[in-house]
Amino acid sequence: AVVLAHNHPSGEVTPSKADRLITERLVQALGLVDIRVPDHLIVGGRQVFSFAEHGLL
Image 1 (cartoon, rainbow, N blue to C red):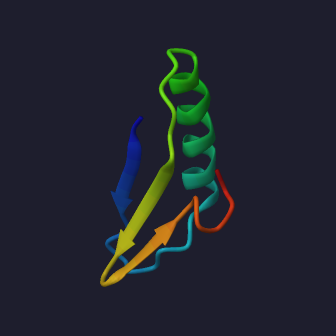
Image 2: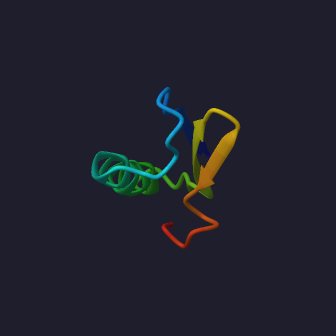
């Protein structure tokens, strides 16, 4: 399994359209080699957004 993570230096942790798209593509690509993605985290300032907690995975 791989947990994806990246930061938003702006401090805004809401995923952008590009964040959602790359997450979808990485989940699909990694799935081809039987690697699951349990979460993708976006860190901004002292906040963290979890794709899994928001039902986006």
